[in-house]
Length: 206
Image (cartoon, rainbow, N blue to C red; front, side, top):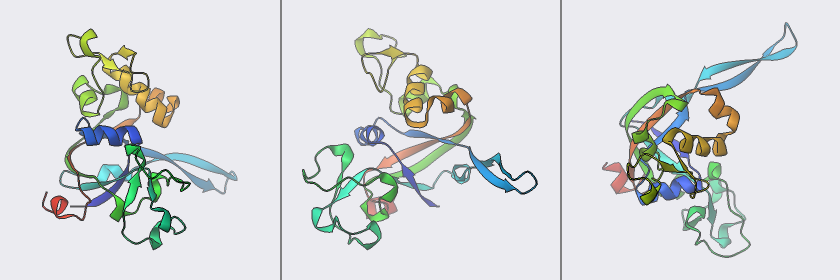
């Protein structure tokens, strides 16, 4: 069992908290550069991402946008005591001049969500199924969709379309249109959400 940090946007954190999201897709390969002395330039190549090592039973601890209490705002995360923090996805953090901190800087002790990986699969990004669209947290188009297979655009809920289109709108918003158009291989990780810090008894017992 391995513990791995994973970043989610505020909208996806809300979907996790609401119980709608039980799957996430991550790139199977990432672009890297290496210096080529022969040509005096850098070569670009694809390398297997660390997500390919994730297996069922591993635990992911969620990093999200946050801010510390004002009395600790002057400290870097590594020097902060374990104390109350505010989560930007909740929109109820203290109304002060303390700026929000990016998710990448959230310390392990401040995380409030743990994801227990239950399944993994590799597939092209655009091959996402309707069932996986639901698992990714997308919402159906409501009464206008009696068959339950038309999804809301996550960015403009009054728009509806097929699942791959709706998920594509979200992916392009997060990663850029070129990433969707390239149709890269992704790791689809299924998980169970535990609403507790990864070091809390509830997560340790999972």
